[in-house]
Amino acid sequence: MKKIKKKGELHPKNPHKGKYNFKLLVKNLPELKKYLKKNPRGEETIDFSDNKGVILLNKALLKTYYDIDNWDIPKGFLCPPIPGRADYIHYIAGLLKGKRKGVKVLDIGTGANCIYPIIGSQSYNWDFVASEIDPKSIENAKKIVNSNKVLKNKITLKLQKNRENIFEGIIEKNDKFDLTMCNPPFHASLEDALKANKRKVNNLNKENKKVKKGLNFGGQKAELWCPGGERLFLKKMAEESLRFSSQVTWFTSLISNKDNIKPTQKLLYKLGAKDIKILEMSQGQKISRILAWTFKTES
Image (cartoon, rainbow, N blue to C red; front, side, top):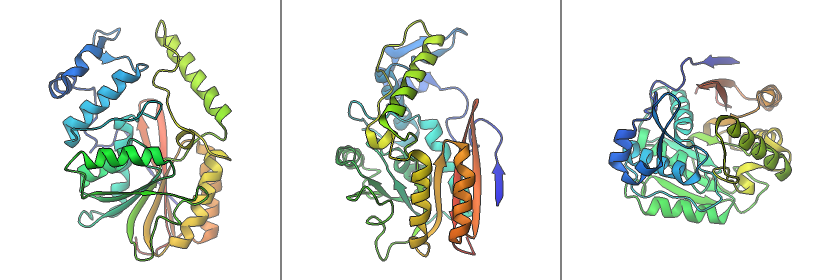
C-alpha cells in the first residue's frame, strides 16, 4: 500500500487557502456584512456557531468561487464547511493522472447541500451522478441544480430506494465511473450523535462567552449516523464495490476515525483490490483521510 502525505493546511489547488477575503465575499453577497465580527486579533470573521451566518458565508463562497447564484438548505440539515469539502475534490483529482475530459464521478450521500458535485463540476468540469436515501435531501439538491444554469447539465440526482444498498440501484448496467466518493455517517446511533453535538457546544463555549443551543449543529439521521457507524458502513461499501469493479476505476471514501483504516484495508486486499492509497488532508490541527482503492491493474 502506498501512503501519500501532503503538507500544508489545504491542497495547493484549493482556492480557500489562507484567510477568508471578507471584503470580496461581502462585495458578492452584501447580506454577509452584518454577521462580521472581530476576533481577538482584530481580524474580521464570523461567529461559526451562528447557523445563519455560516449559511451566508457558504453562499458567498459558492457565488465568488463557483459561480453559484442560488444555494440554500432546509432547516436542520448539515451546513458543510466548503474549504474542507473542496480539499476532498482536489485530492482525488490526483488519482486521474491528468485526465480532465469526460470524467464521470459518483457522489454517495450527496445530502441536501449537493456540495461535492457543485465543487467538482465547477472546479474540473466533471459530470456527476449524486445519490441520496432521503427524499427531502434529493428535493432540495434538485432545486439547487435546477436554479443554477452552470449545474443543469453537469449533475444527475438519484434517490437510493433501498437503504441497505450503496452502489446497487444507482450504478446502472452500462455506467462507467472514473471515481466514486463518499462522506460516510460517522456515529453508530442517534445517542452518540447527540453526545458529540453536546461536546461541540461545550468546546465552543470555552472559546466564546455563550453559544446558543442548537445553532449550526444540524444534521438528519442519514447525515450523522447509521447502524454500526462508520466502520460497518465502510465494510458494506468495500464488499459492494467488488460487484462494480469493472465499472469504476477508483472508489474513494473519507475516513474520520483512523482506527477504521486497517480493518477496511485488510478487507479490501482480501476482496482482491490491486491498489490502495491513503490520502491525508491537513486542515489546521485536524487530519482527515481519504481511502482510495481500485480493482484494476492499470489505474
